[in-house]
Image (cartoon, rainbow over all chains, first blue to last red; front, side, top):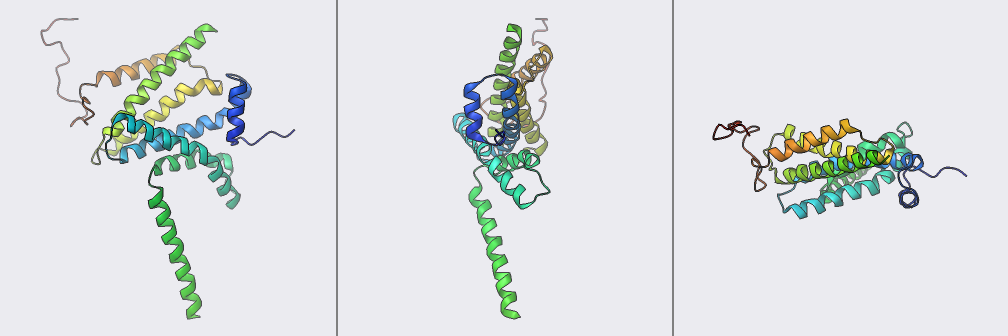
Length: 132
Length: 106
């Protein structure tokens, strides 16, 4: 039987619940520890950018951002790796986790900028098409 | 084997406390805090997290890791007066007499 993907979140938690503190677990959890370490650094920088809040609110924000980074990093890294075969999924995990953590709650702003760039590109193409 | 678990547990708790302190200070920081300070605390969170969770990847902390974690916790704890009320201190190291006020040697 082939080994499941290292970024299989469900498999990870099943594995964790079945065995604790063993070499088998270490081989599966290792990448996630790395993802989480990068994510918490990004989330820390994101926390600093926010307005000062209560400690509880800050902790919840931090856990939410770091948790989101752990959940979506594998998916984003896989998509990016598929788009750019030169970049391995494994190599993309830490930088993607750092960026996702760094974005924090600013997804609206980031996606808005991406959408504006997309529309600008479409306008550019349409403008060129009309001119020719 | 019990010693290994005890050291790992103590290291985990110390790192958790350090992460909490770092996050509280990052939360307190305003926009004009030097980026070097922000990065130092942010990387601190990452480093303490890695140290705390290292047993999960088969790297059991030893007494050396525990010593460094204890020192780091003590450093953060010692500067609590400067960060009281979750406010950023105006200077990295405030003017303060390192001796006891009455000249005694505790």
